[in-house]
Image (cartoon, rainbow, N blue to C red; front, side, top):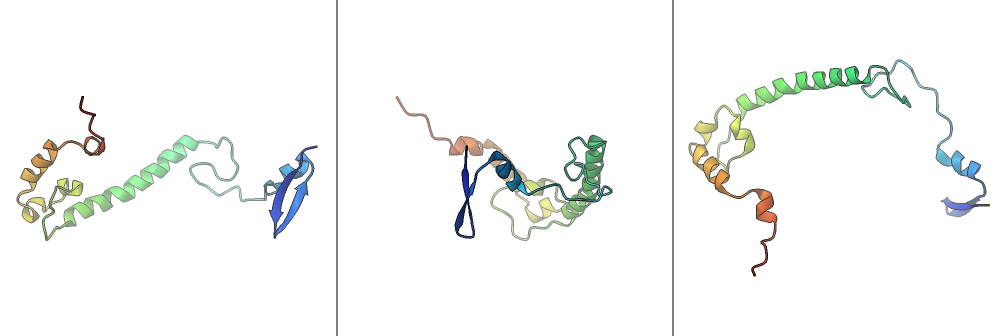
Length: 127
């Protein structure tokens, strides 16, 4: 016989059978509403009907919300003190050249630098 121990409120309980061990997992599935919808299919649904279509619908809703928010943000973004290096969101901002007249020179200087991985990677040993 295999036995396992588990600590419950400071005492040790011995579990003598595999059946007892399998019953520790939270018990039976509880009743749940069948009309609950989410893209992955809901509770304990192994192969939900139309899961791919539902996922695309959910992604479309997220995109339909985020794209106008992103567009509104790029039209409103201002930088009252120019940054020392180009920032990614400046590429889309409406007032980039007004806020930072030297943006394109900074962008070219940034492109000439080695990438982040190359800068962090140790130099090869000299022979």
